[in-house]
Length: 335
Image (cartoon, rainbow, N blue to C red):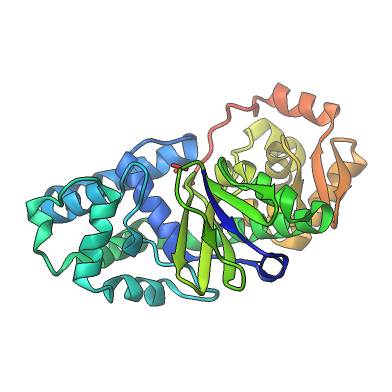
């Protein structure tokens, strides 16, 4: 297993960071695999996979770069610069574009054992090609959804921060993604691969959520390290909300019905605001009505208040046909 040595001060100073480039790279991996994990991803792939494949079919060099760079056990490092707080997509992708060609080739050799394919071995434009492809994915397949995705990611950060206050960092890290857990003795396991441990005490440590089901680690030795993880499933899978049946919408109102349908798992007001796109005040009013009607209940988890359906709410939603199989819309990817 791979683990990092992290002292208490480094962990205490760590922070959550939202990164447009990390979100774009996770989406690139989803396009590369072409395999969805829920209906929202299938809809997104249906909309964007044909154009992505058409682009690579007409650019075999970049297609090979992607296949080699997204190795089975290791991603070429230059494709995933360590996220920085407040960095725009344009600022981050410029760091990909600025990578020295020889260094990019070295990273590709590491991501795929054996000699580098001849098509890539002597090229000096690999960073430029990678940056251009990431920019294409951002412009065509991520930025149109970015406002909603950002709200989902912000909601995940709020929830994780509340968990830190309630159960400490160990509880948060153990639930971050498969392969990541707190081992004790100032050791943070970051994956299940047999890589040498790294001493990162004193460095900047950031945790970066992405909406596709993806995860990886990145670093700029010795000053900055990052763990990228998939945001909470309830948020990722329902990012654009579930469609409430017309009958339930007629009974409760479409917006209030949408809130009730989402509450098959506990969510906070902030999370509901993120996944529905409704204003915070509107979500609060809907929750008060649903509470008074006995259709939802609330409980405190640390500094957060979580809402979920009661048995009566479950009966109403199931009877209306808005059960677990309800179709989701929008986008939401290997750990």
